Length: 242
Image (cartoon, rainbow, N blue to C red; front, side, top):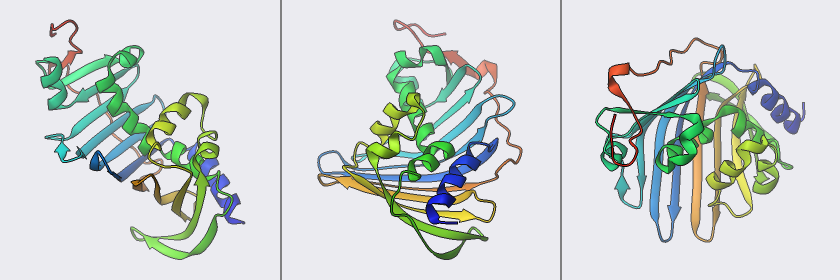
């Protein structure tokens, strides 16, 4: 198949994947804001119910870091967030904060961590690369012990974002805000037509962004559980805690 057909097929296949694990590193550099880095992993499950477990070991920007990292568990209609700095900010008394998805828009802090989920999302990032008009195969390589075919190309940000569902486009534009025109990418696809590694990079006016994601555990069982009830409080309102 032509390289563009391989990407289209990969996008179709990833939409049918029910579980996977991704390890990711996202690096950013900005002339005014300094360097930033997000590193972590995510477990994903779409069936029988959508559930996501995101662990961010490193979250930093401009010399400021998030002590202890961050954790977010999305399950059903709720998201559970564990970030000590957020607890200190809002005055929470328990390790985890529970927020209904219908209320997430009211909490910029919680929404910030949910946006990381989209950056790690297999279906979204695979759809982005299908906008490429210049992708080509550059050889066969091993990724974590698996044989893959390496494809390289670029895609225009605006055209790529339009490949996403309407409700995902605004956040994707925000995630790619440090890229002016085209994003360069490399993707490694295994014999089953699913990606094992994806790297993207781009820049704008001296700012740069690059991300590397490793995917594994397709359709293998994952264990995503809500934190114990006695460790969970609701997002405090008007200075009160639960």
